[in-house]
Length: 201
Image (cartoon, helix red, strand yellow):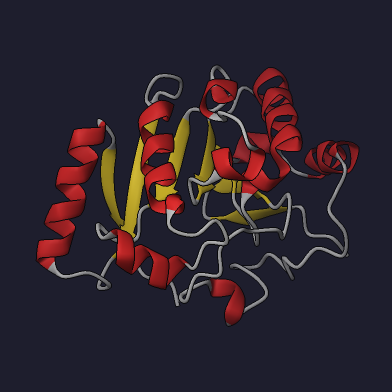
């Protein structure tokens, strides 16, 4: 069974793909196959756009505050389905839309992704993880190598021109206060919001 949509708190999450260009040392996929009451988020196959859209009919959309593209993969690995699903949700349900991403969509798709989000996405939340490029390499282990950290920062900056809310996150307890201050300063320079999110075991 493919779990494409699942509930977390008051939001509906969209699990489009299991593909990801990173092998983060802290990734939850290493220790679990689900979130909350989702059922397994490992997809038997990558769903088509039609499969994704029909799933929404099974949910009472009035219940949800936000539709969030985040599953057991990087949402921009399924960019066309992401954009078309976001358009569908906007037109039919008029819900705010957020993407939780590693920020490497430009490298994945070999083109500028940020302009494509205009009018479709309300919030982009990017995993910053650390203010240090070398530490990022060790933690995130991106397949694109050393260009990844700067590409992620560039993506965040570009998103500020097209998306109302751009957030960069680190996880509570994983950084020193000094590192968190560096992250806050970096986000200020990029013109984005810095958020320290709770640790989920």
